[in-house]
Amino acid sequence: EIVLTQSPATLSLSPGERATLSCRASQSVSSYLAWYQQKPGQAPRLLIYEASNRATGIPARFSGSGSGTDFTLTISSLESEDFAVYYCQHRSNWPWTFGQGTKVEI
Amino acid sequence: QVQLQESGPGLVKPSETLSLTCTVSGFSISANYYWGWIRQPPGKGLEWIGTVYYSGGTYYNPSLKSRVSISVDTSKNQFSLRLSSVTAADTAVYYCARAPFSPRVLDYWGQGTLVTVSS
Image 1 (cartoon, chains in turn brown, red):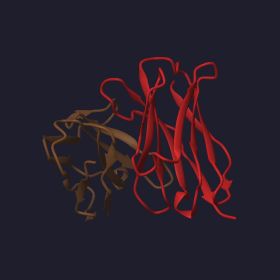
Image 2 (image 1 turned 180 degrees about the vertical axis):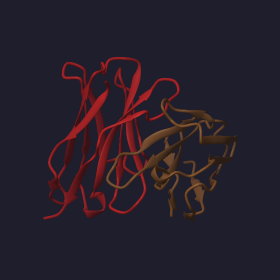
Image 3 (image 1 turned 120 degrees about the horizontal axis):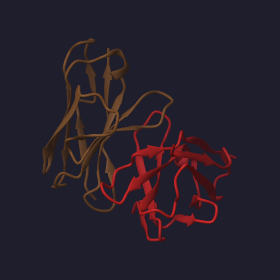
């Protein structure tokens, strides 16, 4: 099973600042990595797939990069609605696994 | 538009079987897609439970494999989860979700349903 480790656990920033979230895989997942955003009381929402492709309707301030074992989600300029928990997830092989999440807070 | 809706008992007794159904609307479950279950214990992260391919092939989390079963009912446009011998550790919000054959990502999710295991 591939373990995904996200860092930091919590990111304290202000609106307008840049957020950089990291996800590291215990072995290569090629580019088969996705990022999800989850707000309290809501289901996760797909942001990025295949490491760097924005899902439908996702604003351009969200970008993803990386391949192999190291991946980054960048939010170029935080808006109030971006404060949430972010999860990475791989689909390189079975079982799929999620990272433990990074909370982006004000 | 595509919608997924979980349904089932909100309270299950320890040692019994948890059964949930996900009803899909606005989309045929017989299309070339995967259908999955994910859970989230209160205040914790996401855990992938398992996935079924539209034609019936299944993939399960090894940590749950001995207790879990996922199936598809194309006549009702639904898929289901059964988790046996539950304990308090199975208390969680359970989500159903869809994943295209390619890219295989969870692009549509249900709103989730809380299942509590307690006597």
